[in-house]
Image (cartoon, rainbow, N blue to C red; front, side, top):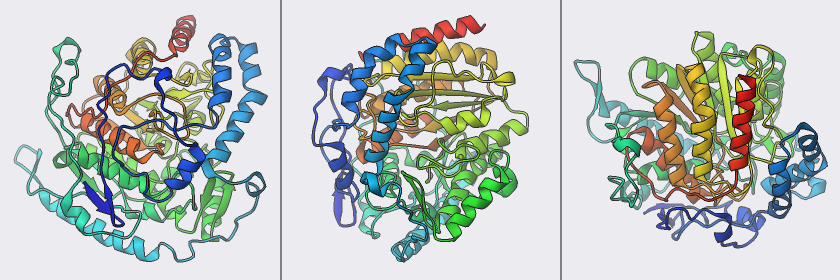
Length: 533
């Protein structure tokens, strides 16, 4: 365990049995709105005990629509569900995300700046961060055959959302047991496949991400980066990670996705002190620099992979990006980090798979490549849910027809449904597309404990999905971006399981889930794919 802001933090590993993800076994606690306020500090960060799902304000409405959704695969019925009812869900989602009263949602915050709240903290974190980068650079050395080998162990940077506590660096995090699948109580991998040798993974992150201030009570908060770093520590693969500071994306790189006028307007708005972009997206003066670094993280990761410095990358960034359309910032997102990286790869002749498992549909990424056959966009998301997009029939336009796959899953969907969708819908498409790079929108808000969603995944399910992606990704050609994930303990466990999978470690702190709904969506997606062939 460790300490941040004088508080003891511990990652608790669930030992619940496999297949326990059915909707009926929920233990409902206090309302999600109250929990979101409680977690604005670090009260909810990595607390002991099994991860349990909180109540979700949109749950009753979504449950009532569940039966209708499974039979609403025709255009007429789907159009009806996309109307007033989905708008109600989106409206509830926005109220839950930020916690503003209705009258406050439209209040202008133009000119609201940081007020000096973060300057001292960010300066301290930046100093510690660069020291860690220097140590990491000394810890790795290139040997005669071009490989990088590990020297003295380097500690990861500490992005503490509160005051820095030097004790945290030395006391560590409660380690999870990890070893063979049998040791974890898991079955061996299918076909007797063994886990690959561990290989270095680059982790791109920056202290400037902390200065992006979303406001009190907002779930997309700096403590999320602490949770991810704690999860990587707990996974036991920190010796297989290379910590790197990203560069800023250039205007030319951004303009592959975002029009010049939009970039000018967003930069000027931040420079004027920031304010509210929409009901759930706010910026301050420092947000523009954070956004440039978030968009540049994937570009830097690709360059490092090209140079042979790592075999994959995880970009631990803020703000997230997959809701940002080419001409609009929304849904916590300013610039579309994934789209900027994918466009750069596509422009040099690569075929790029973007796999988005965030619980919310990545409307911005879809918009960026909807008519582009160089990028295959796949999204497995909860429906109905913010932003109300991602219908099954949305498969692309013009030359991009067939290069978008949407899997709008019902609340309660479990890991076995995700794997079935990957095996039966996504894999055949990948055989035809033959990607040369894979980019992951790695949002972890599909976890059963997330306060904003209703899906039932666990960290074990994210580990299984990681294995699937590694089977289809060309060796050393995978870059992932942090998107959503708002329960800090669930975020830590899930990020740890994901990165451990990239590094070849069988780390599953929670068992995978099964038994939830969603099979009808997989079947419908298969029929749609067969009709289009």
